[in-house]
Image (cartoon, rainbow, N blue to C red; front, side, top):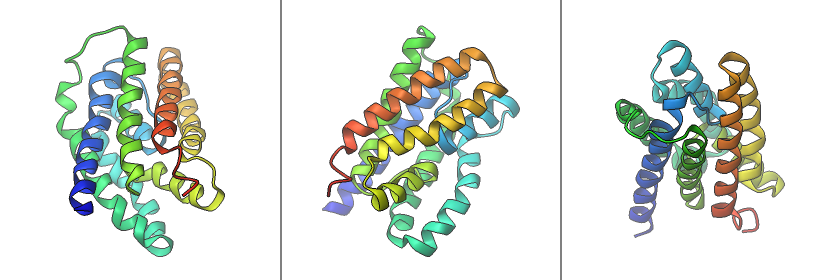
Length: 192
């Protein structure tokens, strides 16, 4: 029963992340942080498929997980593949919703944070920096949402330099919302 519930959470979480990215961030060239943010930068600058880039960039993280954290490897591989699949498959819908860019950044952040938070509650993730943050949280006891926020900040700074000031400002709003939403859904994980 737990396996079925976990599988549903991975699919639902992946769809939430994908909807947040494609419907609310991509139309305004807003970034999320981490490897997803790097995938979005490659999409905005060169038109590369975000999900495919996420998989490529996650390979070193998954090698480390295979060596040191085998449970996380198995638990997050599905999240990585399914979320990357949905990100790329739902990409054509990136101009379906037209709202103010600030509200779009907030709603996108909530959806992404909700998707990531749900997956982390079941010891799975989209891989990438979420997986790194989970490793660090297990070792330090620091909330995984806070660690994700710190990592995401570095990606946003890089993206702001490469794209625009609007991208930078809206991306900061997005990662704050992603971090708060993820923290809310994972607040008891570091204590268990």
